[in-house]
Structures are given as structure tokens and as C-alpha cells.
Length: 640
Image (cartoon, rainbow, N blue to C red):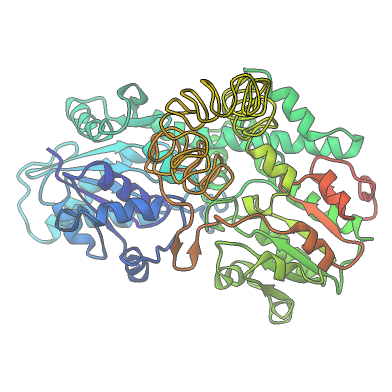
């Protein structure tokens, strides 16, 4: 039976993974280790070293077990390895920056160092699990490496080797499994709690199958068995690279079409809708923007290119390399468009960049498009003001690495409003919800139906709670036959009638909208605890919970129907503080005030295709969005 699990690496994979396993498996002690003492100290405090919605709540839940707390963060790597039954490698594998394969191949230096330590320390059977993104074939090489290292170490120490067969050392048996992570930063906790699939790759041996079953037993504690898929190691490793490459390709494809739209006057949103309506294509990952970044897409696509070239498959390598090139071109083209719209000169101008992380709901800035954007703005002589709700000032300066001269023109602000004062142009570079314009916010609340939760006229739809066809359809709260309808307050069955407001079946009656406490009751739509029970749909803060339909924990909020802790989930509160990482449960920025404080003409460059052009233009802005032609464009940017 598995009693101890060690995660080596306390980064964006190891920390959340260890926390979720400890949360779901209280009988297992999970130890997350890292040689970075400052990072471990941060994990052991209330100021976590990273921001992920819901993560701090899960860790707090585990720590509340007091004497039964089964989650440990430590720098004692050797002890954790010695005690572990399963060792999960959650170690960064960056793209090589030197030698053969530079810029394409993955650097396995940290992985190899960990394997050496395991081989040196282990005295009992171990299951070693690859979680990190690795080149195909790494699992089998790890199996060979751990044995060969052990043999060398023991020979040097004059130990007698009684037995050394495939995967074994003396009385120890090693099995290496490939169990790639499919996590998306910003939704990591949800991805771990509700995985779309769990892949386990193993050697086709009896011991390999036994190790697979032990790992699968852990996942079955919270994952439906049909989602746990076993396969060979190569297939599991290739599936990880291929999944991210296909997702990156999808974004690059829609971005390539956005360039055509800008040139001919088409609308990329309409094109995406037209294509995404085909069920074979679907609408996900079809929003054009500045391009993709982060820890996975860039290195995984590059690794796939390198793999194809190393196998002599140059046409295949060229195909996937085009995905990388398209992503780079999208960012270059956006910068050229900014210059073209602003008369090809931004020297001495104030440019505000809203958003610095590579995507919303994360503090990660790795390969963020904002980094190169800010650098190029500085090179052009602009003063650049940056605001991001989760990224620290120190991180921004580290990533941009400005020269001494440029650093005088790089400024970081703690609010969007301050960053935009006196700006000649505002660039939205990350799709944080607080940057949305009012019309975009309304659209984002139209969940699951054309206009809301229950279909055409749902809770937050155009005809929502107070609309024509209220909460539950034709005869809803304020619908045709509702409070103010034909049979409403003053109707045949009015206020005190059988079906009136306070009647047997009325709004606040015994059989109100959803039970004992109807629309405005103690637990009603606007009450303390939402529509369907003590705490909303099924979570702690459901559809109409503490912060109501449009509050911090609303339909699309942190705890909403589609939020991190939505239906049937843990239910974290919308506002939490983790040191420098305070959750972005903020209200939307005041666009009218921002525009008033900008210099005229006020340009808004929508790098994430998330704002309402009509709304901003009604405020007097010059709106320029990706995939949309603009009268401010100099088409094809001929002089750049």
C-alpha cells in the first residue's frame, strides 16, 4: 500500500499536484521538496510563491487537519526520497540554450541530477513517475540510468552487487512510469480535481503493470476509472508534446486568419464563430490575440520540431516550426500596427501596458508576449507604464531587463487607473477580467445558453431575473405570469392570493422559486445563500451565493458555475490574499475615467480581442483590435 509520495520540484506543477493529492488522499503523506529554500519557506507561509485560483484554500483545508496534516514542504530531498513509495518528478525541463539542439531540445540536466540522487539514496523499492515534459523515450532512459548510476556508485564504494537486472539494484526494484500533466495555468486546481484524462505509460512487463495499478489506485480516489488510460511509455510522452502542439497550432491558425481579416475588412470574431459552429471544429481556443506563451507551448512545440528533425522527418519538422513562426509573427505584426496607427513615431509618448502575465489568472510570466512588447516600446523611445494584478514590480524589471537608460522610462503601477493617467495609448496585453468593458462582461456571463444558465432567458441573460422571461422560463419571477405579469401583484391571484406574492405558491411562499426561502427570502436569489440550497448550486458559494449573480463569486467568478470552484467543487471565496499575489476578484476598471485621463487622441490597442469596440469608441477612443480593420490602420504598414 502506498503511504508516502514525494514530489521533487515545488514549482507550478509540484506544489499544486502535491496539495491536491494530500487533499484527496488524507491517508497518504505527501512531501514536496525543492532545493530552493526561499521557495519552500514561501510554501510554508500564507504568502504562496505562485498564484492559482483555489490553491490556497486547498492547502488551508489540509493544514486544518492539525495533527493529521499530511502535506509537507521541505528542502530535505534525500530524506523524502528515502521514505517515499512513489517519487514524482515535477522538475523544470527548459529549452536548451547551448550546444546541439540549442533553442529546440529540452534540457534534462535537472532531471538527471534528481535521478542520480534517487539512485544514491534509495534503499527500498521505488516507483518513479515522470510528470515533467520530457523528450520521447526518456522514461526508458531513466530506467537504465538509475541502474547504471547505482552500479557505478556501489562499485566505487566497494559494495558487493548481488543482483543487478533490468530496473533493479540489489534488493531494490525501480519502475519508471510516464504520467504527463495536462495542466493549464490559471485553472490548475480545477484541472487536477477534474482531469479530462489521466495517462499512465509503463513498460509492458508484469512489474510495470503492477506499478501502473498502484498509481491508478491513487487517481481513482477522485477520478472516474474510464478517464484513466494506460499505454506504453513512448505513447504517453508523445501524447503530452502532441496535445500542446495541437493547441498551439489552433491558436496560431486563428491568428493567421486575423491577419487576413485586418487586411480585407473581415471580422475575426465572425470567422471564429462560423468555423467553431462546426461540431467537428468546436469553438474552444479560437480567440485571436497576441499569441501564446507560458511554460509549455513554446518548449513543447520546439521539442516536437527537434524530435522530427532528429528522426530525419524534415517536412514534419517544418510543419510544426511554422506554428512557432506564426506565433512570433503575430507579436511582431501587432507592434508594427501600433506604430502605423500612431504615425510611425512613439518617441516621447506615454504607452500603458495592461497585463504582464502570459495569460489571466496566473502570476507566471514565462515567454509572455508582454515581455518583448515592452522591450520594443522602450527601444522606440516610449515611456512604458505597466500594470498587472498578480505580477510584482521586481518580476517585471527582471523579465524586461532594460538598459540603464531604458529603465528610467519603465514604470510599474499598483492600479490600472494610475498607470493610464496621461497615456497616449493603452495596450491590453493580458485578458484579465477586470480589464473587460461592460458589454464584454455581459457577454461573458451568458453561460451555457444563448442568454444565460437555463437557456435563452437564463439568470444572467438579456432577459434574466428581471427580464421578460425570468429565472426559470416563460412563467418566471417577473415573466409573463410573474410578479408584475398578467397574474402578478394586482392580478387575479395577487399579493395575498392563492398564487400571489405571499401565497401558498408565491415568490416568498412555501413553494417559492426554489424552496422555503424564495427570491428575496433569507436564502433567496439576493439573500445570503444562493438559489438551490444553503450555499448555492452545490459549492460553498454557488450561483447566487454571498456575492450574488454578478459578485466576486458570481456565475463566471472564481466560485461561479464555470469558475474554478463552481458546481460540485470545493467552493473557495472570491477574494483571498497570498502575499504579493492577491486574487483578481476586483471589479472592472472604470473605462470612462481612464479615457478622460488619457491624452487625446486616445488609442486603445486590444491585444487580446476582449473589449467592446462600440463601447470604447462611444467614449471617444480610437479602438484598434486584432482581427478587425480600423480606419486608423495604414494597411500593410508599407514603410515599416
